[in-house]
Length: 81
View 1 (cartoon, rainbow, N blue to C red):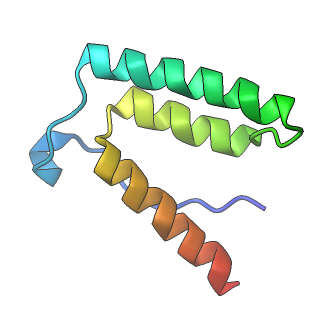
View 2: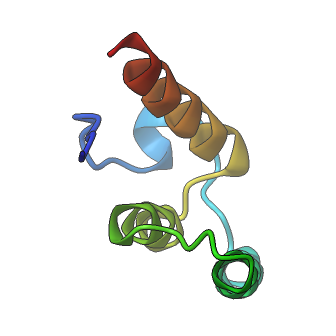
């Protein structure tokens, strides 16, 4: 099942939040890659949709608070089903 939250693509100007720097994005990407590997080792791999979500966060340079809010909203939608 794919759950997509229909949020428009916009940057810091509309949200008031500073976007991540190149260094912060690189660190997040490194942590994600390590986490994906560890999840696979534990026989609990991320789905392609989950990987795409984290790649979107990096591509769009979302701050961590915004990422968390997005994930929590997604969980709430799944729980409501």
